[in-house]
Image (tube, rainbow, N blue to C red; front, side):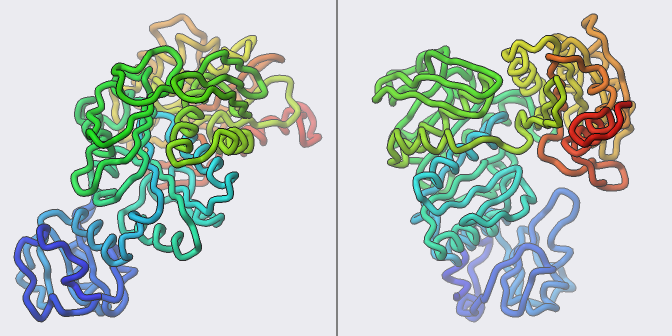
Length: 503
Protein backbone atom coordinates (compact mmCIF):
# COMPACT_ATOMS: atom_id res chain seq x y z
CA UNK A 1 0.00 0.00 0.00
CA UNK A 2 1.33 3.45 -0.91
CA UNK A 3 2.48 5.68 1.95
CA UNK A 4 0.15 8.43 0.75
CA UNK A 5 -2.77 6.04 1.38
CA UNK A 6 -1.49 4.99 4.81
CA UNK A 7 -0.45 8.26 6.47
CA UNK A 8 -3.00 10.95 7.26
CA UNK A 9 -1.80 14.34 5.91
CA UNK A 10 -3.03 16.36 8.90
CA UNK A 11 -0.69 14.43 11.21
CA UNK A 12 2.41 15.10 9.10
CA UNK A 13 4.73 17.89 10.16
CA UNK A 14 5.76 18.35 6.52
CA UNK A 15 4.12 17.05 3.31
CA UNK A 16 5.54 13.82 1.94
CA UNK A 17 7.95 14.21 -0.95
CA UNK A 18 6.35 12.92 -4.15
CA UNK A 19 8.69 9.96 -4.52
CA UNK A 20 8.15 8.86 -0.91
CA UNK A 21 4.38 9.31 -1.16
CA UNK A 22 4.35 6.78 -4.00
CA UNK A 23 6.54 4.28 -2.14
CA UNK A 24 4.87 1.05 -1.01
CA UNK A 25 4.81 -0.30 2.55
CA UNK A 26 4.41 -4.04 3.00
CA UNK A 27 3.73 -3.84 6.73
CA UNK A 28 3.84 -1.67 9.86
CA UNK A 29 5.84 -2.04 13.07
CA UNK A 30 6.66 -0.09 16.24
CA UNK A 31 9.15 -2.70 17.47
CA UNK A 32 12.36 -2.76 15.45
CA UNK A 33 12.71 -6.50 16.12
CA UNK A 34 9.59 -7.09 14.03
CA UNK A 35 10.63 -5.00 11.05
CA UNK A 36 10.84 -6.78 7.69
CA UNK A 37 11.91 -5.39 4.29
CA UNK A 38 9.45 -2.76 3.09
CA UNK A 39 7.94 -2.07 6.52
CA UNK A 40 7.06 1.40 7.83
CA UNK A 41 8.62 1.76 11.29
CA UNK A 42 7.00 3.98 13.93
CA UNK A 43 9.44 5.29 16.52
CA UNK A 44 7.61 7.06 19.32
CA UNK A 45 8.60 7.88 22.91
CA UNK A 46 8.07 5.07 25.40
CA UNK A 47 8.07 4.94 29.18
CA UNK A 48 11.78 4.10 29.38
CA UNK A 49 13.30 4.51 25.91
CA UNK A 50 12.60 6.52 22.79
CA UNK A 51 11.82 4.38 19.77
CA UNK A 52 13.89 6.72 17.62
CA UNK A 53 16.95 5.03 19.14
CA UNK A 54 16.05 1.94 17.11
CA UNK A 55 15.65 3.74 13.80
CA UNK A 56 19.05 2.61 12.51
CA UNK A 57 18.24 -1.02 13.35
CA UNK A 58 14.89 -0.75 11.56
CA UNK A 59 16.52 0.81 8.50
CA UNK A 60 19.17 -1.91 8.43
CA UNK A 61 16.37 -4.48 8.27
CA UNK A 62 14.90 -2.80 5.22
CA UNK A 63 12.34 -0.35 6.62
CA UNK A 64 10.99 1.85 3.83
CA UNK A 65 10.86 4.85 6.19
CA UNK A 66 10.93 5.89 9.84
CA UNK A 67 7.96 7.76 11.32
CA UNK A 68 8.68 9.82 14.45
CA UNK A 69 7.68 12.92 16.38
CA UNK A 70 11.35 13.86 16.52
CA UNK A 71 13.26 15.64 13.81
CA UNK A 72 15.55 13.53 11.65
CA UNK A 73 18.91 12.98 13.35
CA UNK A 74 21.82 14.41 11.40
CA UNK A 75 23.57 11.05 11.21
CA UNK A 76 20.50 9.21 9.82
CA UNK A 77 20.56 8.99 6.01
CA UNK A 78 17.36 7.03 5.34
CA UNK A 79 13.77 8.17 4.76
CA UNK A 80 12.43 10.03 7.79
CA UNK A 81 8.82 11.20 8.21
CA UNK A 82 8.15 13.61 11.07
CA UNK A 83 4.63 13.63 12.53
CA UNK A 84 2.83 15.75 15.10
CA UNK A 85 1.82 12.80 17.30
CA UNK A 86 3.44 9.38 16.97
CA UNK A 87 0.72 7.17 18.41
CA UNK A 88 -2.05 8.98 16.55
CA UNK A 89 -0.09 8.56 13.35
CA UNK A 90 0.35 4.85 14.11
CA UNK A 91 -3.37 4.42 14.86
CA UNK A 92 -4.59 6.11 11.67
CA UNK A 93 -1.94 4.32 9.59
CA UNK A 94 -2.96 0.94 11.03
CA UNK A 95 -6.61 1.70 10.40
CA UNK A 96 -5.87 2.57 6.76
CA UNK A 97 -3.44 -0.31 6.21
CA UNK A 98 -5.98 -2.90 7.42
CA UNK A 99 -8.84 -1.29 5.45
CA UNK A 100 -10.73 0.18 8.43
CA UNK A 101 -12.00 -3.06 10.01
CA UNK A 102 -13.41 -1.23 13.06
CA UNK A 103 -16.12 0.21 10.80
CA UNK A 104 -17.42 -3.30 10.08
CA UNK A 105 -16.66 -5.16 13.31
CA UNK A 106 -19.17 -4.20 16.01
CA UNK A 107 -16.83 -2.81 18.64
CA UNK A 108 -17.56 -2.35 22.36
CA UNK A 109 -15.16 -0.59 24.73
CA UNK A 110 -15.60 -0.64 28.50
CA UNK A 111 -13.73 1.72 30.79
CA UNK A 112 -13.66 2.49 34.52
CA UNK A 113 -11.53 1.57 37.53
CA UNK A 114 -13.04 -1.68 38.76
CA UNK A 115 -15.12 -4.27 36.94
CA UNK A 116 -13.81 -3.88 33.37
CA UNK A 117 -12.53 -7.45 33.13
CA UNK A 118 -15.68 -9.06 34.48
CA UNK A 119 -17.99 -6.85 32.40
CA UNK A 120 -16.12 -7.50 29.15
CA UNK A 121 -15.87 -11.22 29.89
CA UNK A 122 -19.60 -11.38 30.60
CA UNK A 123 -20.45 -9.54 27.38
CA UNK A 124 -18.19 -11.83 25.38
CA UNK A 125 -19.88 -14.85 27.00
CA UNK A 126 -23.27 -13.51 25.92
CA UNK A 127 -22.09 -12.91 22.37
CA UNK A 128 -20.49 -16.35 22.02
CA UNK A 129 -23.55 -18.02 23.56
CA UNK A 130 -25.58 -16.31 20.84
CA UNK A 131 -23.38 -17.90 18.17
CA UNK A 132 -21.16 -14.91 17.39
CA UNK A 133 -17.47 -15.25 16.51
CA UNK A 134 -15.73 -12.72 18.73
CA UNK A 135 -12.56 -11.11 20.00
CA UNK A 136 -12.02 -10.26 23.68
CA UNK A 137 -9.14 -7.97 24.62
CA UNK A 138 -8.35 -7.27 28.26
CA UNK A 139 -6.23 -7.63 31.36
CA UNK A 140 -6.15 -11.42 31.66
CA UNK A 141 -5.62 -12.47 28.06
CA UNK A 142 -6.79 -11.83 24.53
CA UNK A 143 -9.20 -14.16 22.73
CA UNK A 144 -9.49 -14.17 18.96
CA UNK A 145 -12.16 -16.41 17.43
CA UNK A 146 -11.78 -18.94 20.25
CA UNK A 147 -7.98 -18.83 20.34
CA UNK A 148 -6.22 -17.47 23.45
CA UNK A 149 -3.33 -15.04 23.05
CA UNK A 150 -1.10 -13.65 25.83
CA UNK A 151 -2.02 -10.18 27.11
CA UNK A 152 0.86 -7.70 27.22
CA UNK A 153 -1.18 -4.65 28.25
CA UNK A 154 -4.79 -4.26 29.31
CA UNK A 155 -5.25 -2.40 26.03
CA UNK A 156 -2.58 -3.17 23.39
CA UNK A 157 -1.13 -0.70 20.90
CA UNK A 158 -3.40 0.44 18.07
CA UNK A 159 -1.46 -1.54 15.46
CA UNK A 160 -2.06 -4.77 17.38
CA UNK A 161 -5.73 -3.93 17.82
CA UNK A 162 -6.37 -3.15 14.17
CA UNK A 163 -4.49 -6.31 13.18
CA UNK A 164 -6.72 -8.35 15.52
CA UNK A 165 -9.85 -6.72 14.12
CA UNK A 166 -8.65 -7.52 10.60
CA UNK A 167 -7.86 -11.14 11.53
CA UNK A 168 -11.23 -11.49 13.26
CA UNK A 169 -13.02 -10.26 10.17
CA UNK A 170 -11.06 -12.68 7.99
CA UNK A 171 -12.23 -15.51 10.27
CA UNK A 172 -15.85 -14.47 9.94
CA UNK A 173 -16.00 -12.63 13.26
CA UNK A 174 -18.49 -9.89 13.91
CA UNK A 175 -17.98 -8.50 17.44
CA UNK A 176 -15.00 -7.35 19.48
CA UNK A 177 -15.03 -6.30 23.13
CA UNK A 178 -12.11 -4.57 24.80
CA UNK A 179 -11.10 -3.00 28.09
CA UNK A 180 -10.29 0.65 27.43
CA UNK A 181 -7.73 1.60 30.07
CA UNK A 182 -7.07 5.23 30.98
CA UNK A 183 -3.47 4.85 29.80
CA UNK A 184 -4.65 3.61 26.40
CA UNK A 185 -7.14 6.42 26.05
CA UNK A 186 -4.66 9.11 27.06
CA UNK A 187 -1.76 7.77 24.99
CA UNK A 188 -3.85 7.26 21.86
CA UNK A 189 -3.82 3.47 21.63
CA UNK A 190 -7.50 3.49 20.61
CA UNK A 191 -7.29 6.73 18.65
CA UNK A 192 -9.40 6.67 15.46
CA UNK A 193 -11.42 3.59 16.47
CA UNK A 194 -15.14 3.58 15.88
CA UNK A 195 -17.02 2.11 18.85
CA UNK A 196 -20.65 1.08 18.61
CA UNK A 197 -20.98 0.75 22.40
CA UNK A 198 -19.04 2.46 25.19
CA UNK A 199 -19.46 1.27 28.80
CA UNK A 200 -18.49 2.87 32.11
CA UNK A 201 -18.21 0.90 35.36
CA UNK A 202 -17.05 3.37 38.05
CA UNK A 203 -14.19 5.67 38.90
CA UNK A 204 -12.19 5.39 42.12
CA UNK A 205 -8.63 6.26 43.06
CA UNK A 206 -6.06 4.49 40.89
CA UNK A 207 -3.19 5.29 38.52
CA UNK A 208 -2.62 8.72 40.09
CA UNK A 209 1.10 8.15 39.74
CA UNK A 210 0.36 8.63 36.02
CA UNK A 211 -2.66 10.96 35.94
CA UNK A 212 -1.73 12.96 39.10
CA UNK A 213 -5.34 13.80 40.05
CA UNK A 214 -8.84 12.41 39.69
CA UNK A 215 -9.91 15.12 37.25
CA UNK A 216 -7.19 14.14 34.76
CA UNK A 217 -7.99 10.46 35.31
CA UNK A 218 -11.65 11.14 34.51
CA UNK A 219 -10.73 13.24 31.47
CA UNK A 220 -8.92 10.25 30.01
CA UNK A 221 -12.00 8.06 30.52
CA UNK A 222 -14.18 10.74 28.93
CA UNK A 223 -12.31 10.27 25.64
CA UNK A 224 -14.17 7.00 25.05
CA UNK A 225 -17.45 8.94 24.90
CA UNK A 226 -16.18 12.02 23.08
CA UNK A 227 -13.41 10.67 20.84
CA UNK A 228 -11.10 13.10 19.08
CA UNK A 229 -10.80 11.18 15.87
CA UNK A 230 -13.90 9.08 15.21
CA UNK A 231 -17.67 9.35 15.52
CA UNK A 232 -18.96 9.07 19.10
CA UNK A 233 -20.35 5.69 20.18
CA UNK A 234 -23.85 4.91 19.08
CA UNK A 235 -24.67 3.67 22.59
CA UNK A 236 -23.30 4.46 26.05
CA UNK A 237 -24.03 2.09 28.95
CA UNK A 238 -23.14 3.82 32.22
CA UNK A 239 -23.49 3.31 35.96
CA UNK A 240 -26.08 5.68 37.44
CA UNK A 241 -24.82 4.90 40.97
CA UNK A 242 -21.36 6.31 40.26
CA UNK A 243 -20.92 10.05 40.78
CA UNK A 244 -18.25 10.36 38.07
CA UNK A 245 -20.40 8.54 35.52
CA UNK A 246 -23.11 11.11 36.08
CA UNK A 247 -20.65 13.79 34.89
CA UNK A 248 -19.89 12.20 31.51
CA UNK A 249 -20.42 14.53 28.57
CA UNK A 250 -22.31 12.49 25.96
CA UNK A 251 -22.51 13.44 22.30
CA UNK A 252 -26.03 14.39 21.19
CA UNK A 253 -26.20 11.40 18.83
CA UNK A 254 -25.27 8.85 21.52
CA UNK A 255 -28.15 6.86 23.01
CA UNK A 256 -27.60 6.48 26.76
CA UNK A 257 -28.54 3.39 28.76
CA UNK A 258 -28.25 3.94 32.50
CA UNK A 259 -27.94 0.97 34.85
CA UNK A 260 -27.77 0.70 38.62
CA UNK A 261 -29.28 -0.38 41.89
CA UNK A 262 -29.75 2.69 44.07
CA UNK A 263 -29.89 5.93 42.07
CA UNK A 264 -32.30 7.01 39.40
CA UNK A 265 -30.70 8.36 36.20
CA UNK A 266 -29.58 12.00 36.54
CA UNK A 267 -31.55 13.02 33.44
CA UNK A 268 -34.59 11.82 31.57
CA UNK A 269 -32.39 11.16 28.55
CA UNK A 270 -31.95 7.53 27.59
CA UNK A 271 -33.15 4.19 28.90
CA UNK A 272 -32.95 2.80 32.44
CA UNK A 273 -32.08 -0.67 33.76
CA UNK A 274 -32.40 -1.18 37.50
CA UNK A 275 -31.59 -4.34 39.46
CA UNK A 276 -34.34 -5.22 41.93
CA UNK A 277 -35.15 -8.20 44.17
CA UNK A 278 -31.44 -9.01 44.49
CA UNK A 279 -30.58 -12.36 46.07
CA UNK A 280 -26.92 -13.06 46.86
CA UNK A 281 -25.56 -16.40 48.00
CA UNK A 282 -22.43 -18.52 48.19
CA UNK A 283 -23.44 -20.09 44.87
CA UNK A 284 -24.13 -16.95 42.86
CA UNK A 285 -26.65 -14.18 42.42
CA UNK A 286 -30.14 -13.61 41.12
CA UNK A 287 -31.99 -10.39 40.40
CA UNK A 288 -34.74 -8.84 38.31
CA UNK A 289 -34.13 -6.07 35.79
CA UNK A 290 -36.77 -3.34 35.81
CA UNK A 291 -36.89 0.08 34.19
CA UNK A 292 -38.42 1.42 31.04
CA UNK A 293 -37.75 -1.68 28.96
CA UNK A 294 -39.16 -5.19 29.10
CA UNK A 295 -38.56 -6.67 32.59
CA UNK A 296 -36.53 -9.85 32.89
CA UNK A 297 -34.56 -11.87 35.44
CA UNK A 298 -30.88 -12.77 35.62
CA UNK A 299 -29.14 -15.72 37.25
CA UNK A 300 -25.36 -15.94 37.49
CA UNK A 301 -22.68 -18.08 39.14
CA UNK A 302 -20.72 -14.91 39.91
CA UNK A 303 -21.00 -13.78 43.50
CA UNK A 304 -21.43 -10.47 45.27
CA UNK A 305 -23.22 -7.19 44.83
CA UNK A 306 -20.40 -5.75 42.71
CA UNK A 307 -21.14 -8.37 40.06
CA UNK A 308 -24.75 -7.23 39.85
CA UNK A 309 -23.32 -4.03 38.37
CA UNK A 310 -20.93 -5.89 36.07
CA UNK A 311 -23.68 -8.15 34.73
CA UNK A 312 -26.04 -5.20 34.27
CA UNK A 313 -23.44 -3.43 32.16
CA UNK A 314 -22.86 -6.52 30.03
CA UNK A 315 -26.61 -7.02 29.60
CA UNK A 316 -27.13 -3.38 28.60
CA UNK A 317 -24.33 -3.57 26.04
CA UNK A 318 -25.64 -6.84 24.61
CA UNK A 319 -29.18 -5.49 24.25
CA UNK A 320 -27.75 -2.39 22.55
CA UNK A 321 -26.03 -4.69 20.06
CA UNK A 322 -29.38 -6.23 19.17
CA UNK A 323 -29.26 -9.46 21.18
CA UNK A 324 -32.43 -10.81 22.74
CA UNK A 325 -33.23 -11.05 26.43
CA UNK A 326 -33.07 -14.83 26.17
CA UNK A 327 -29.57 -14.64 24.66
CA UNK A 328 -28.49 -12.34 27.49
CA UNK A 329 -29.85 -14.71 30.13
CA UNK A 330 -28.23 -17.76 28.54
CA UNK A 331 -24.84 -16.05 28.11
CA UNK A 332 -24.74 -14.85 31.71
CA UNK A 333 -25.65 -18.30 33.01
CA UNK A 334 -22.85 -19.80 30.93
CA UNK A 335 -20.16 -17.69 32.59
CA UNK A 336 -19.13 -19.67 35.66
CA UNK A 337 -15.92 -17.84 36.63
CA UNK A 338 -13.59 -14.99 35.73
CA UNK A 339 -9.92 -15.82 36.50
CA UNK A 340 -8.60 -13.91 39.47
CA UNK A 341 -11.92 -12.24 40.28
CA UNK A 342 -13.20 -13.72 43.56
CA UNK A 343 -11.84 -17.00 42.26
CA UNK A 344 -12.22 -19.85 44.73
CA UNK A 345 -9.39 -22.19 45.64
CA UNK A 346 -11.02 -25.46 46.67
CA UNK A 347 -9.16 -28.32 48.32
CA UNK A 348 -11.99 -29.58 50.51
CA UNK A 349 -11.21 -27.20 53.38
CA UNK A 350 -14.07 -26.13 55.73
CA UNK A 351 -13.48 -22.43 54.97
CA UNK A 352 -13.40 -20.44 51.77
CA UNK A 353 -10.20 -19.23 50.12
CA UNK A 354 -10.58 -16.74 47.27
CA UNK A 355 -8.10 -14.93 45.07
CA UNK A 356 -8.99 -11.47 43.78
CA UNK A 357 -7.28 -8.78 41.73
CA UNK A 358 -8.37 -5.99 44.12
CA UNK A 359 -5.48 -3.53 44.31
CA UNK A 360 -7.19 -0.26 45.23
CA UNK A 361 -8.95 0.69 48.47
CA UNK A 362 -12.35 0.73 46.75
CA UNK A 363 -11.80 -2.68 45.14
CA UNK A 364 -10.61 -4.06 48.47
CA UNK A 365 -13.75 -2.79 50.18
CA UNK A 366 -15.89 -4.34 47.47
CA UNK A 367 -14.31 -7.78 47.73
CA UNK A 368 -14.49 -7.80 51.54
CA UNK A 369 -18.14 -6.79 51.38
CA UNK A 370 -18.79 -9.69 49.02
CA UNK A 371 -17.35 -12.02 51.67
CA UNK A 372 -19.43 -10.33 54.37
CA UNK A 373 -22.52 -10.88 52.25
CA UNK A 374 -21.89 -14.63 52.49
CA UNK A 375 -22.38 -14.51 56.25
CA UNK A 376 -18.77 -15.46 56.89
CA UNK A 377 -17.91 -16.07 60.51
CA UNK A 378 -14.74 -14.07 60.02
CA UNK A 379 -13.02 -12.41 57.05
CA UNK A 380 -9.25 -12.75 56.87
CA UNK A 381 -7.74 -10.39 54.31
CA UNK A 382 -4.25 -10.61 52.86
CA UNK A 383 -3.09 -7.68 50.76
CA UNK A 384 -0.07 -5.68 49.67
CA UNK A 385 0.60 -2.50 47.69
CA UNK A 386 2.53 -2.19 44.44
CA UNK A 387 5.90 -0.50 44.28
CA UNK A 388 6.67 2.46 42.00
CA UNK A 389 3.00 3.38 42.03
CA UNK A 390 0.72 5.86 43.81
CA UNK A 391 1.99 5.96 47.42
CA UNK A 392 -1.02 7.89 48.70
CA UNK A 393 -3.38 4.92 48.22
CA UNK A 394 -1.32 2.63 50.48
CA UNK A 395 -2.70 3.85 53.84
CA UNK A 396 -6.16 3.95 52.27
CA UNK A 397 -5.85 0.28 51.39
CA UNK A 398 -4.67 -0.44 54.93
CA UNK A 399 -7.72 1.36 56.31
CA UNK A 400 -10.09 -0.54 54.01
CA UNK A 401 -8.65 -3.90 55.03
CA UNK A 402 -8.57 -3.18 58.76
CA UNK A 403 -11.98 -1.52 58.95
CA UNK A 404 -13.87 -4.36 57.28
CA UNK A 405 -11.84 -7.48 58.14
CA UNK A 406 -11.49 -9.51 61.32
CA UNK A 407 -7.82 -10.27 60.71
CA UNK A 408 -5.34 -8.73 58.28
CA UNK A 409 -2.13 -10.11 56.79
CA UNK A 410 0.01 -7.38 55.24
CA UNK A 411 2.51 -8.59 52.66
CA UNK A 412 4.34 -7.72 49.46
CA UNK A 413 2.71 -7.24 46.04
CA UNK A 414 4.97 -6.43 43.07
CA UNK A 415 7.39 -4.19 45.01
CA UNK A 416 9.37 -3.49 41.82
CA UNK A 417 12.33 -1.19 42.62
CA UNK A 418 11.11 -0.22 46.10
CA UNK A 419 11.96 -1.78 49.46
CA UNK A 420 9.02 -4.07 50.34
CA UNK A 421 9.25 -3.12 54.02
CA UNK A 422 8.99 0.58 53.19
CA UNK A 423 5.86 -0.08 51.12
CA UNK A 424 4.36 -2.12 53.95
CA UNK A 425 5.10 0.65 56.44
CA UNK A 426 3.06 3.06 54.30
CA UNK A 427 0.08 0.67 54.36
CA UNK A 428 0.51 -0.05 58.06
CA UNK A 429 -0.33 3.57 58.87
CA UNK A 430 -3.88 2.88 57.69
CA UNK A 431 -4.16 -0.50 59.41
CA UNK A 432 -3.15 0.95 62.76
CA UNK A 433 -6.06 3.37 62.77
CA UNK A 434 -8.19 0.39 63.79
CA UNK A 435 -7.84 -2.25 66.48
CA UNK A 436 -8.04 -5.12 64.00
CA UNK A 437 -5.45 -7.86 64.69
CA UNK A 438 -2.84 -8.00 61.96
CA UNK A 439 0.51 -9.50 61.06
CA UNK A 440 3.12 -8.23 58.61
CA UNK A 441 5.06 -10.75 56.52
CA UNK A 442 6.97 -9.55 53.42
CA UNK A 443 7.41 -13.05 51.97
CA UNK A 444 4.15 -13.53 50.09
CA UNK A 445 4.10 -17.33 50.24
CA UNK A 446 4.72 -17.29 53.98
CA UNK A 447 2.03 -14.62 54.32
CA UNK A 448 -0.47 -16.83 52.49
CA UNK A 449 0.41 -19.63 54.90
CA UNK A 450 -0.20 -17.27 57.86
CA UNK A 451 -3.60 -16.27 56.48
CA UNK A 452 -4.74 -19.84 55.84
CA UNK A 453 -3.43 -21.11 59.18
CA UNK A 454 -5.54 -18.46 60.89
CA UNK A 455 -8.74 -19.68 59.22
CA UNK A 456 -11.42 -21.66 61.06
CA UNK A 457 -14.53 -23.39 59.67
CA UNK A 458 -16.93 -20.83 58.19
CA UNK A 459 -14.28 -18.17 57.60
CA UNK A 460 -13.41 -16.52 54.29
CA UNK A 461 -9.75 -15.94 53.41
CA UNK A 462 -9.20 -13.27 50.76
CA UNK A 463 -5.86 -13.21 48.94
CA UNK A 464 -6.05 -9.78 47.33
CA UNK A 465 -3.97 -7.92 44.79
CA UNK A 466 -2.57 -10.33 42.25
CA UNK A 467 -5.65 -12.14 40.99
CA UNK A 468 -4.85 -13.82 37.67
CA UNK A 469 -1.18 -12.76 37.71
CA UNK A 470 1.38 -15.54 37.62
CA UNK A 471 4.43 -13.51 38.64
CA UNK A 472 5.82 -11.26 41.35
CA UNK A 473 7.79 -8.22 40.13
CA UNK A 474 10.92 -7.65 42.24
CA UNK A 475 13.80 -5.20 41.90
CA UNK A 476 15.67 -7.58 39.58
CA UNK A 477 12.63 -8.43 37.48
CA UNK A 478 9.65 -10.80 37.59
CA UNK A 479 9.72 -14.25 39.18
CA UNK A 480 7.01 -16.94 38.82
CA UNK A 481 4.35 -16.68 41.51
CA UNK A 482 0.64 -17.49 41.52
CA UNK A 483 -1.52 -16.91 44.61
CA UNK A 484 -3.78 -19.78 43.58
CA UNK A 485 -0.90 -22.26 43.40
CA UNK A 486 0.57 -21.00 46.65
CA UNK A 487 -2.78 -21.40 48.40
CA UNK A 488 -3.15 -24.94 47.09
CA UNK A 489 0.32 -25.84 48.35
CA UNK A 490 -0.53 -24.57 51.81
CA UNK A 491 -3.93 -26.26 51.91
CA UNK A 492 -2.51 -29.59 50.79
CA UNK A 493 0.32 -29.38 53.30
CA UNK A 494 -2.35 -29.04 55.97
CA UNK A 495 -4.10 -32.21 54.89
CA UNK A 496 -6.74 -30.91 52.52
CA UNK A 497 -7.25 -32.14 49.00
CA UNK A 498 -3.91 -33.78 48.29
CA UNK A 499 -3.90 -36.39 51.05
CA UNK A 500 -0.76 -34.98 52.67
CA UNK A 501 -0.31 -35.14 56.41
CA UNK A 502 -1.71 -32.23 58.34
CA UNK A 503 0.91 -29.86 59.71
